[in-house]
Length: 126
Image 1: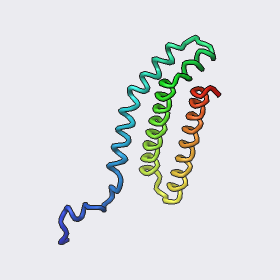
Image 2: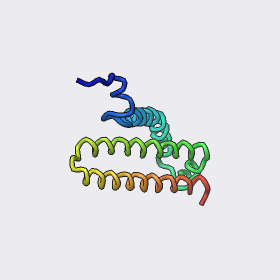
Image 3: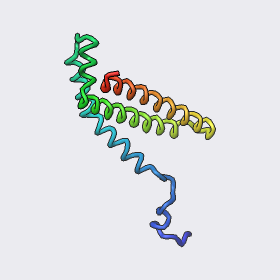
Image 4: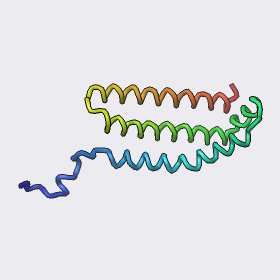
């Protein structure tokens, strides 16, 4: 029988560590993705049949560029959080888990950086 109180056992220790922050980040990015994705889908549908110059002008608008950057950040952060949970839950060997986590995060950040550079090229007119 332990002499520690339940609060003392829960404070700063336990199996959850940063689980609450991870859970909130996943929910917030999910909520942010709803309006951003709807905006993006309707915007792209309105560009159906447009040529490259029209798309470049559309993506080059600073307001749209900011929304595209927010969409990219939310998508890739949400994906990284989800993939992290999958790896943590289904990969049982610690060494494999660490390698997969590093590779996954590197791939997500690389893809996000590529998308951000593309948007910035349109927005800055390069």
